Image (tube, rainbow, N blue to C red; front, side, top):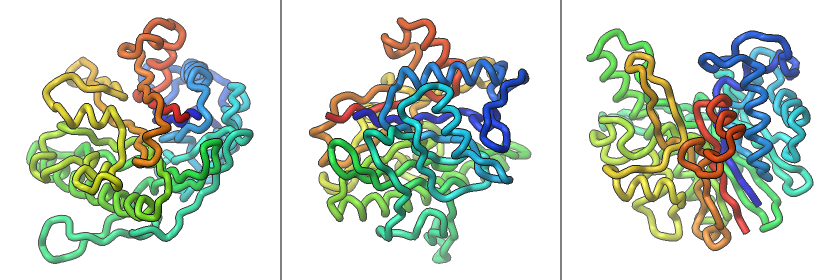
Length: 333
């Protein structure tokens, strides 16, 4: 069974309000990529993935009267994917939803945010972020998707996540950028603590668990990590927890083991002001200890680093055209 996560940049721009693919010309939300080019590239990538379930990050939106669920179903039908059913959780107003695209002949899935250790992700989380003895109220702009699944290897729980970016958007000057970056880092860490508390509740209940998605975080990603002692990734993994309460992803483990050597990467962004590309590890498929004996292969579908992707010119170009992130998959026996 293959589980994957894929952050699709500006997926919603490919669909009209009713969820139909926009067949006309025009640019997509991707830099120098038309809608037709991105659509065709995405179909190529999803077909190659051939996953039983894909956590689609930045899925087509359901805000402002738009039907993102219909859009994802339309895409699956047009691409001829066996993963054609959609499970969605709490809606948001960011034009970027979290949706699970899955094969209904193999898996059943339902949104199932049970009471578990911390408030539901569409509510509020209270925590003192700056040690001033006053509670701060934290919310998710994109509430994680909690799914109960029946699969060929048994019942699983899956949490799909897209944690807020830490970039200091809207900064007026360097000092303002620093203040925004620190505030965003605090909020990002608080969201990871919230996520971790619900993860621990599921693990303590003995539920096999997968956490998949984009954490917008990795070891050494910015200079403010040292200020707070650890990354959001380490919090979600439970690096300081007992062995039976730790989540595992080999790419994350490798990155955390050595922050000065080469690490895996799952995203590639163009920096206009520097006229170069930046690569980062942002996307993960984490599993609970009881699933590790079933894990056979994690794979980042990187067009340059994965030899199969590199050797297939059509797939390589599709991966570069489709999104600024690359899929991450896990095969479970």
